[in-house]
Amino acid sequence: MNKSELIEALAEEMNIPIREAASITNTIIDTMSDALARGESIEIRGFGSFVVKEYESYTGRNPKTGEKIQVSPKKLPFFKVGKDLREQVNKHKE
Amino acid sequence: MKKKNVTRKELAISVNEKLGVSQRNAAEIVDTVFSTMKDTMVAGESIKLVQFGTLSVRDKAPRRGRNPRTGESMIITKRQMVSFRPSKRLRERLNK
Image (tube, rainbow over all chains, first blue to last red; front, side, top):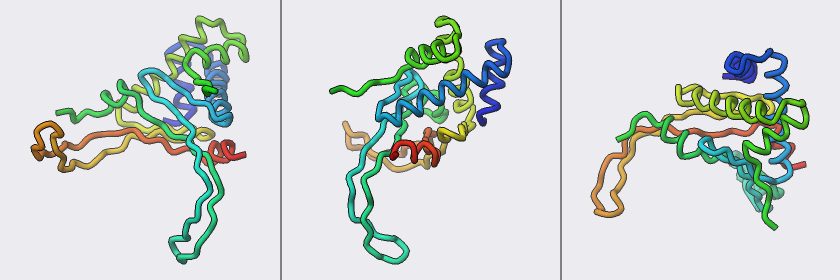
């Protein structure tokens, strides 16, 4: 599913025009991206949470050449799946 | 200082303030967006939001594990998990 399919599904489900569903979907995605860019977390109950992890700078190696390189500090977003979604997605329960 | 945590409530407020959708409708729409994404992943399909990232459903291979209480060895069956790969644009925004 891509963004336009999500927008179509939302428009149909809520009985609203595609254009409105599109601006709402974009606003939600932008609000989430802005929050992560500020280093904030997102927690959607039953769905999952997004957390920004910060990494210090470290000395790494280019795996191809073995050359040492200095990796600068960086931030990466991580997703942790919520219990409800994890259980529903996992169809091969014991 | 504790970092802020964005929930469905904050997303609904943002939809209300930016687009003038009533708070009640905004809350319902935000819920629908996440339940639609959830249903899609439960059906085994991935979700690709170009400017944000991809949520994909992956198969995890069965492996040998142990019951931590009894120490008994057992096979942990094949299962599914959700993984997130942030888009290049999101990764760049975080490091600006």
